[in-house]
Image (cartoon, rainbow, N blue to C red):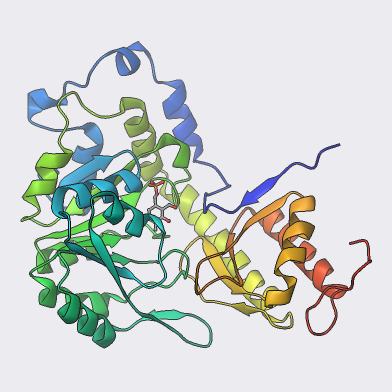
Length: 356
Ligand SMILES: Cc1ncc(COP(=O)(O)O)c(C=O)c1O
């Protein structure tokens, strides 16, 4: 019998959405499916942007809705980055950032993230040095960052943002694993061309609904116009997203379970020879493993239906990125890695010929 696969490779939330989201889907009748929204009659863009404007205490104009955060990131690039203009991104970051700059003939440069003993860190001084040298048109911050998992502190953001007045700035908060909203308003008050991008894919377990949003500073008017649609957005996705926003306790419960499991990963994988588990604020962790076990470990886990991401990036090629799954899935993965290592030699090299 084929082993059922457990996917812990793409930072989805395997707990699934709240019961209220399913209820919203069940209630999606003909009006929602067959007609355009009529919220424009009260001067609004959409029911979701109305709701988000209220939650973030901004005007509805300052909210963008997109087909996932990826769509909004691409829109920002299409809107603000011309051919030959520069995008500044973290040294280790989601591959997509560079790709969308390439698509428009833009250039991209990287600012460093500093590797410490148990995690990566943003360094404001080093960032500003690169910023002044490269004079980018657009700057991307990611907090938490994929794949390193580190956040940028609010103090650092508040310190650097006033110095970036010549740039359009994006703060990608796709992996924010809490429901805090106040800092977003504080930050866009500091930089009026700041665009904070979030998604329902991760925390809210709605990756398949493809819905994300952004909160913009008051001078990000070009992207507001660029993002505007006339016949409305995906009405069912919007209703499900609103149901998710209302399910506060459900999602806090998941975050608490993930925090417990993250600690288990740190403790259990952290004590394996040659492994380093980096501190993460996201729903995934980055783990450095001995180079010589990479291929065998990959085969061992894949044979057991355990799918995680084996990184192949230039400076992160002996690393795993593990999505925090459900408690049962995490237990299976930790035990499988321990079983693999139990028969590996002390150097981490697996013993050839043992049937694992
Ligand atoms: C850093 C980062 N931002 C944004 C996204 C896109 O999320 P979505 O398009 O599902 O909203 C991802 C997806 O993995 C990501 O890693």
